[in-house]
Image (cartoon, rainbow, N blue to C red):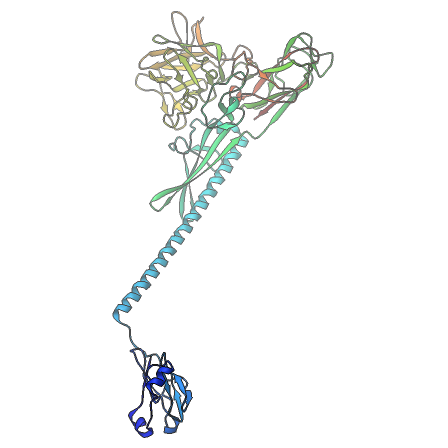
Length: 598
């Protein structure tokens, strides 16, 4: 604020009179002072002189423009200070800020605040840059994963078996190898993983394959539930051989950790073929195989196929027709999807139902490695401690032989013997124990498991058992025991071993079991027990949804497809259908349609 006081010389010469205290108070002024010189109090203000033009004064150097105040006027100068001019003309100069230095503590505080601001900004900048780098790396990994999935889909569309027949299957969290694969430059599936370098980052890429369960005996919705028995009415949960879950996995180093991206997709057999049979007015007794639907068939009973060409009618209360063998033309086999008929159901209570048979041989005898469910009659192996092992009697359907392994389990007085970690009585346990009985062109190896007795070896010698070669279980170089399947008959022969209960014989009579003929194990001449692949070497095996001879695919009417349980007819080249009619003459079948996928 201002403090105003007169200069001594100026006051003496002009006899300046100050306003009274009462006058100042009446005006609400602070202590009055003449206006001849003003001094700004405080360390941050400089002295400014107020001079009158009459006395030859001039504005101080550097001051702001002067303000004129006439004689006798009262003027506020500064906050709360007033004065009355006694001069003819007085020019007032505002106080100017005084330049002064800063203390050391102020400098230190300013530096500290600045450092804090700069540090925070730098930290935010580093975080932003790092986040952008991680985001770019994740985007790249996602692109690599999707690219691999697209390539695997292309492989599956070209040949489904290349994907489905992989022996080591499991989720992306399982060990890699053996549960991971990649594609080489020719799109061949190779066990292991590959590396890709993008923007100086090394990405490790692979994919894993898992079997997929569906309800309605493997024909409807995907489910995470374990397998459950398939009933004749087609309820239960089974593996769907036409669907595989493929997960692409990409990992890369990030900081001190390993980052990963997982992208999953369900792949299915995408191609569909349809065989439509529309006329049975030709000849019976034609076994086939045929490569396109014709008028001929193999056999029938109780039906009229000639009176109305293109239609099947009943001549009795019931009848059936067995088709000729149809060749799909795919040596690797196909999956059969559905059956459907078209025509007139007629009277309420009339019914049409089917059974289905498939094989990798045109005469229903196996060539190479017989595959399919275990026979309902020839189904028993023997052990001297626990007795019979039944490979057909498991709940939900019999054990089965695929091109790569055996599935499901055998039952006995000593409990279940699981043949495959995917299809055990407890569901998929491969995450904790990777085991199965492998099939290499009818030569079995690997392991089965029983909760009471432990491992059962299907191949070995005095010092070695089956070993993992990176893709499947294989026998040692010179096995002294093994179980094998005859390519022509589908008969099992040979021996398996358990450390507690000893030998398990797969074929024998009352006095002896299998014997070695120099190249394979063979049954005695007249065996009283054996295990056999159904349909192999003994005609066509017509079965229904639960895999038995006593169940049927029941339709709901004309034009309504009924799903075929693919698990019983997977990767087979040849098929036959058997249609059953029941009711009266109003029931007419005009078309039978079989849908399948290569």
